[in-house]
Length: 554
Image (cartoon, rainbow, N blue to C red; front, side, top):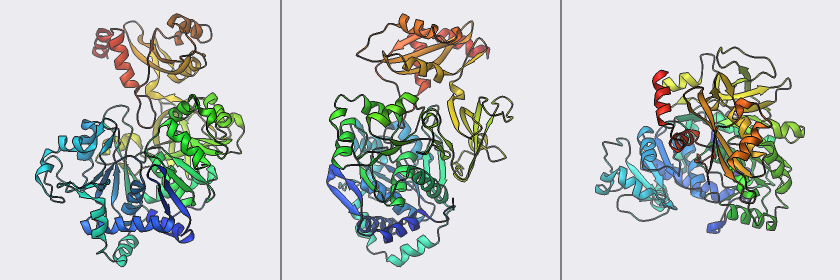
């Protein structure tokens, strides 16, 4: 693979020159259509507006919004002027929002009203009440010393904030040559994005990513997916995540594919527009695909055009992958594996044998090296032996913003990124994921993979989803607790599930505790927040004293 030494804005300009009149973006809920010429004009207008506002190369510009055409345009606009776009998770509550806004040192915040029961404006006024005392662009806040500008993406008038229309209007004073001069000064290795990790434990860390990593990763993944100018992707993955931003939006812009954008995932809406727009591609996390496959009216949807896409974000059960291929007509579905810290690291391709496609995450992408090491000794293990997956290569982050200690812990002196994932590599280079190291349960000295027990529980017809965690135990150190989302159509008791596991797995892998729940707490990318389940189990089974005793003895 010939690597791309370019900037995102410059690369997209070249694609626009190639397909000026080709439709590139559809926002069906607003009946909005853009061809490449119209879209790049919007990007340039936003970029010039930001220059007029005083945004300089390296300034941090944050966005808090659901998916929209303006969101995608802002991704390209900030890349064109060298501003670093900070992606804020739309699901954040006030405390998380405050942490990220303060930690990221943003000068400018783009936001919308919010959605459902999350009001972005109210949350902003709550954490920054002094905003009410200043005119647009003149904010002075001790808590947020860098923040000066707040901009509505919804074009709503507010005495304390600019709106998008104003930014575009003022940008007309900026000559095209000024934007071009700014763009030409940028380099491919310049940091252009800050993506916050999912935050399954503690505060999220701010991952810094450059143009080079994003462009080359998106190019490699798109090539493996065989996306082309003939494809049409339904985009519902959140743009504040690398899978939505780099691996869907930017990837499709690079390959000339049409983006059908919906603001967020909703099963009925996804199926409606997959059918109406005759989409050929869909990217999603396991949770999304499970909702679609379990939707009562799935058979009524016309998925005859759908054929390709990827599934990623968390562990993919082999049966789930097969069901997607067969029931959603996605014969060219590929699995991929990555992290915010390294974008996509491994990917299957359509030509791989079926057993590899459903049981592994494929091989390392071009530009990536992998090795499996013993987590305790750090020494590389042989093929077929379980250990921690380490990766090295061109897509690895530049580091965590303002957190050198965490950066050095994640990336060692030889530039290997420690993924924290347990995996096995075969002689052909295929990687099979087993689970997270932190999810390993140590019961009486036995190391137990929670993923193995979850996978077995899911094979029971009465179990829709399962999540297994370790909980404190006075005698064994840890015991096994299984949280079950039941299948409404098939009934089962706790005793029957325990017997089911006992009859087929080793005795030490049998859960001591089982709890039936309606849903799991998850991150925006569908990862289960197991630390919350552990807390729930401690309360549910009255293990507080055990926990305190265990913690005191460590």
